[in-house]
Image 1: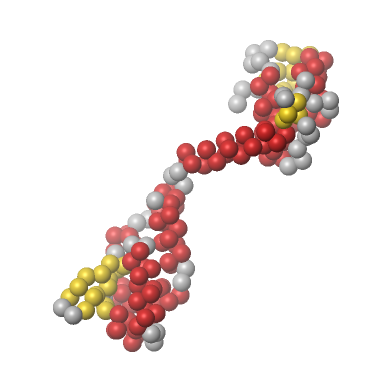
Image 2: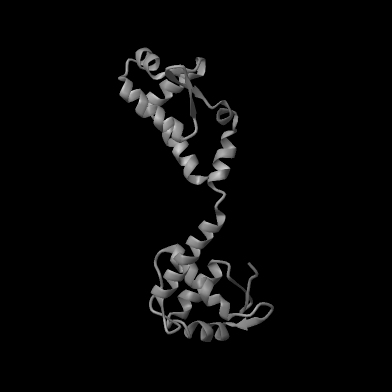
Length: 183
């Protein structure tokens, strides 16, 4: 459905097609009449009508010797929000994309369980920190020394990573004690 919505919006983004639609809103017409009214070549009108039909905006029917084109009024009765929601409906595809990205980042920055370097980009750093925080148990308090030892298993710069875990609200601290926050 996402491709159909994109095709629809692309069709509506053309001035000649909008002029054709406006003429067809008054009454169904054949190519030659549209060509005459718009001052466009019949081949140009036919080209645009094909695009409009592919996107579902226009329909055609044969009447005697002519093919008459009209507007699909049901499409124009659809709320814009419904069209947009359909486009965003593929949450599974988006989740899969995010999971592939996450996997790629982890493969790039970790080698044999050790962090090769701390990512500069926030999104990548967040993924690394989310992976590291899995080493901490929920419902358990850690001393700063214990936190440093766990982080040092990943990377030598445990101070920077400890601060990042706290600032990203993956760990919290109070009076020298640290604990993992629930997501």
